[in-house]
Image (cartoon, rainbow, N blue to C red; front, side, top):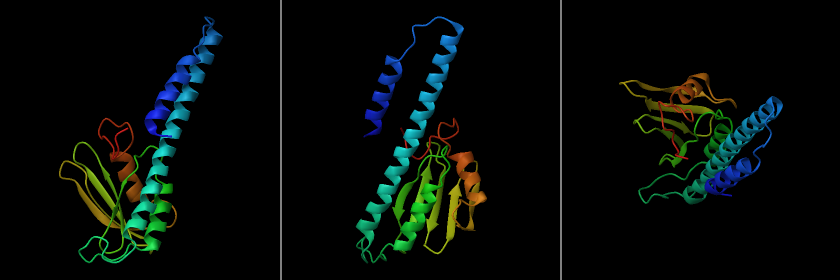
Length: 178
């Protein structure tokens, strides 16, 4: 199901289940249902985006698993790098937009976040539990470094993602526009 189809169907469901009650209890219940529906809708959007990113990673591996996939001598994308990227995408905080997937000519997988104001953050995964990262975060603020990936996003990277690439933040537009 596409995001647009899901959004339309969710709005129709929410609108078709409006209460005609006038009591305080009825209004309270209607508010609780509306809040639960919004929470479910948001959860489903995040799930759809995460699934799309998983699919993009697998398609990237399929397209770039042979040497010279770019016509300029690139190394084949490493299966371990793809597996590591799948794991990392799986633990991206819910409030953070999903990244774009970029194969790298050294056989690594890059995950890129961009926003509408020109902020960019990239992590590079090589399949050996070491993440290389770099970003331009506005106001001349540049970051770069290395971190170990042991199944959870390292705090230094998580903090950058939450602060600069959170969904619905007025400061950023996220890497994907819904």
